[in-house]
Amino acid sequence: MKLTFLGTRGEIEPRTAEHRMHTSVLITFRRKRIMIDCGADWASEVDRVRPDAIVLTHAHPDHISGLTNGIGCPVFATPRTWDIVGRWPIPNRATVNPRDPFGVHAIKFEAFELEHSLRAPAVGYRIGSGAATIFYSPDVAKICERHEALSGIRVYIGDGAAITRPILRKRDGVLIGHASIAMQLEWCKAEHVPAAIFTHCGTEIVSGEPMTVQARLDVLSSRTRIRTRIAVDGFELNVA
Image (cartoon, rainbow, N blue to C red; front, side, top):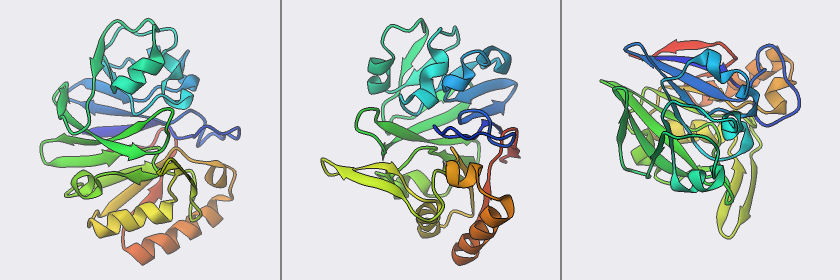
């Protein structure tokens, strides 16, 4: 299973060559191409990706608005996301329900509810092919069933909106916003996850001086003993 980070920028104004496009990852396995999320930046670019299927995490514009003009391949999303998408010209729709595993071209997906937004509830995905399993949650304040989501995974791919200071508030008893990288590494440490990659990068990373950002990550990595890196557009990873 090969991962290509097509885009790594969150819903922010700054962009660089390393973080140019809205966050999306492409999974390639047995000659099939599965794209996760398709934000506004991808509206005129998705055809060149040539996905065989698209899986959506939630309905914020930087994750779905590349599909406003429609697409012919199968698209997988939760009922709440389909409610927000409405009548966009997406004829081949599949519904995702949390903790109900499903297959997409020989890749196994299982959705887990996340706290992130009340208006556009998000899920993260436990994704596997054979013995290789990852967890993907590019926008997250809290993983609701963290042990079940992260147990036994090879790589955690998470939210890079903030390094040490989370961007969080509570509404109706639910966390809204973004857990920090530091918080997510503690989740990974508790579940014995060996490696973590962060995407959906915020201004702190995108506009930061690279050596300073890396030094801060190195400190967090040494504290948790988890191999840690920031993804950039075009970064590739083979998970076997």
